[in-house]
Image (cartoon, rainbow over the protein chains, first blue to last red):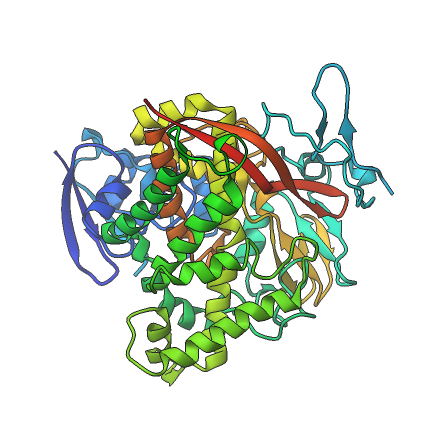
Length: 103
Length: 435
């Protein structure tokens, strides 16, 4: 199982576990506030914006050009920003911590 | 006048070409009807990119509209930037002015929250979002599923149905309008019987087939909503009328006009767009029967398939904005108080962003389309539309082996010198069930 922890805008810590899919899918499955996932993960709606914990940035990797273009026009964007529908669950990111940007 | 482009040669069957004209011809206006109204049965589900040359060559299209010109923005990144910049390109202009063709001459009522900007926009959007997110729940989706299942059961050809020619049904009126109207009753949480009234209005609530700005037609909706709002004041209700009558925005109750403005948007915004999405999907499957099997066998691709259908069809071609100051978009100077429009349909075929933009790729994984708009004014009804289309496509894939189109009349929009197929006036189809 792959562990991912979400810190919501209200300060709540939600610990989740999953096997496959995306970090967004995991968030939706666990009703994490602030993660919409309206487009189901095709990088169209930007409702799954998170800030990745500094310690995890390198292993999560950089956003693609398409994702960067989306993030460019998103509120509260930072160097740690990712759309979590574009982060695939894998052993490489076990223990990931992300902060949800939207309330 | 530039005559309609119709081809009639030995290589291709007779057909009307809804493709764009070259930039040099872009200001020619076409009004003639193509004499060859036969459709190409192998391409009925094909929706060409009408804006490709203009998008690649200049990035914009000038269109006139009742002496209030519009500069249509065509590239995805430029469209997104302008949509994001709500402060410069506002929606809270004179009611009806951001719509193209402008509805300024036929309505005073402001559609909410669509024709508001922050801060008012945020207050109304916060009030409405929980209601319009209900389609994410299984209970809501089950209701939509029952509606779709019922209509498919009625129209699928099991050898007993006899409606029109060769056991066929009009996908626009018999199928899509029925599903859209019944599904709207779920969105509003009103009895499904109400849908009978809405179906009786026909496919458009603001337009008749020969008049894009039909004030009398709009009055039918306004009168209906006035009556419903007054009726809802009499007793506690758990429908959208009850929600709005009991709601407060900035510490005050909503006026009847504001309630009506929200409801008009709900009725009008999800009418043609949903009907086109449902109908066009049938047209696509008629050309691509293998796609029905593929989705049926690979339900894990249902979501990407539906998002791709939305991108490819782009059921709302564009939406306008009004400049609050001088500005620039697509390297063009935009005068204060002039209009631009954000062309979602063109942006969704932008070859600098999408690989093979004119192919409908059911498994397209990354699909940053703007079929539901972009930025703070993105479509409030998108959750409902997505849920309905996922159920529609899944049901068709599960139960239908093939879709035959018997007759088709395309619905072609005209923007300046550009023609765009957005859907169908009629699409006579026969659905053959799986054995």
